Length: 218
Ligand code: DX5
Ligand code: ZN
Image (cartoon, rainbow, N blue to C red):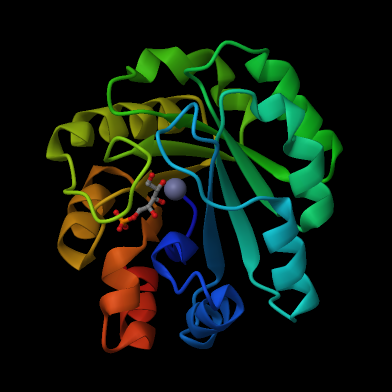
């Protein structure tokens, strides 16, 4: 199973100083930075686009970019995000497009690829794609906004996907996103998660380095 790690979400950073917020996460020792891309269609909110990733790279941010595309048409944008400096690009299973081809395209662009499930989407929806992905992201809130309450009823879905991972001898990361802090994260860890997105709880934490170290020690 992959080593546990924390991916702070820049959504909860200072949007007038995203470079400084990314640097704060890196300085705390976070190996990944989670970047939430919203289009106002798949989710009822807007964030930022590939130019922000490119600007973060130009400003010297070297962290692994875990890019979460909440887009109705992600296949139209994967190349732009790869060129902008994404290391991993995750796409949702819910919209209607060629998921397998888009995952293969992400790989061909030199990035790792992930598939994402909304809270209302059953684990079965991604089962056939598991051999093809580097990461499965189980949303533990309805995507669109930070600061929502963790949905504990997602724990059996996490355990199911972890069980398939073991049965099939696969090594993809299993990530959770939404309402994650040290308490809810520990519950997800017990269910099989290894990769933990934290927005609000990370940027509010007084000792961010301790937060990163605690997750890495799980
Ligand atoms: C929600 C985003 C999350 C968000 C999590 O749509 O996908 O990544 O930043 O924020 P918190 O950790 O505050 O729930
Ligand atoms: Zn996210």
